[in-house]
Image (cartoon, rainbow, N blue to C red; front, side, top):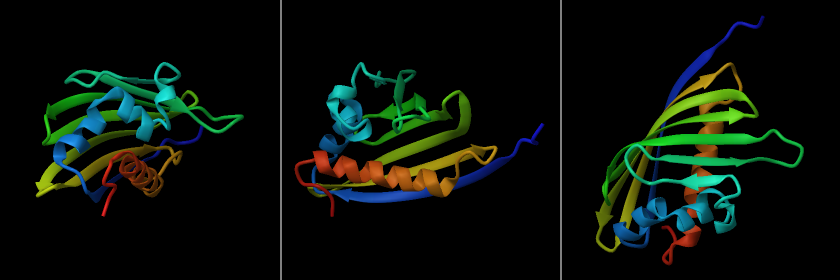
Length: 155
């Protein structure tokens, strides 16, 4: 049997969006908006994507390339302060293999008519199936997608 391994890492990503905090926060809280930037389209609702945005609520997203593997993201919201922060924990799976466990905090700060978003993730990456660098790259891509659904985009 191959010995198990863990790698711990933390990354921080900052973005500025050219819309007020209420709009950026809303894009995290509204299932249709979140599905558009996080799951690829609003059509994902009911097709492997679920969002119950409340403390204790869950978010699930499944998908992957044709032929597999199927990646599954399962999260639970631990703290929500409207228009200020979201704290959630999540697990990632490749098919049935758990590849990571993370805690993430998203902070929203008003900068006049714009929003400064700071996402901090602390992850445990399991048995070499995933790395912090891969996760950070994927998260950066998701935050870029968020900009595409906001009227002012990002700066």
